[in-house]
Image (tube, rainbow, N blue to C red; front, side):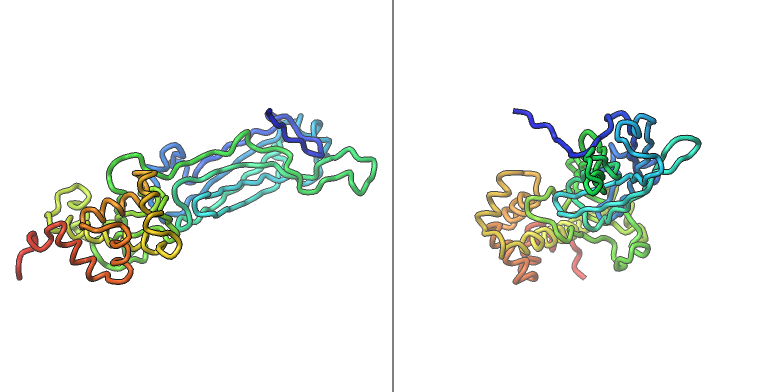
Length: 300
């Protein structure tokens, strides 16, 4: 049986508010954000809204009362939430509001939920003056929150080319980084990423797949270490069997990638994670052996 939400104050019709949500700068397309966004980069959302004349009559609110536009962005996977608001003001005879919200790129992964509200003093219709106004009432909101996936759908490994000197990273040709709070069930694209340093000439050849085999072997070893170390950080919370079950449930998650790496090393996922945490040098040796690293590097 359907349940309709009932609020103890007057609310306007859905079309009494016009609202548009976009990204800043304007050339960023929300529909393509999974392809354009690099893990760790901040995202700035902008919401602009206007009120129709019917809004005031339907809510019973005087135009002099303060009405605010609220923009809310949530990342369910990271259990994080951001909020910004701005008052509606009369501009050229229309009531408008606009607000920007910066979302910390270091705290988001997998997907985002974006919503917009109009908040103000709701009129309850009570004859008792003490109860006649519901302060901070959610008068209007989007029909449904906007869902924005951050995962890439392509089969290629998540990769970004950035200046390491400009982003505070060490002066190395590449770096494999995992999201700080990445959990085993998170998607690969939302959990781990290869950053290639544009400050080095080798960057272009790495990105284009034209670098020497030993370079890709070294990168593969770094990916092994980063992924298994991130999964291994959950060993106190999840048993080896639970990690394996997570990998079986979703072949596109971080745990599944770790399980595949473990198989290539001739280990169980639990043992591979143990090595990553307790014996990283031992893991490095196995990883190099699995990609025939020593056979591809000239003896000096």
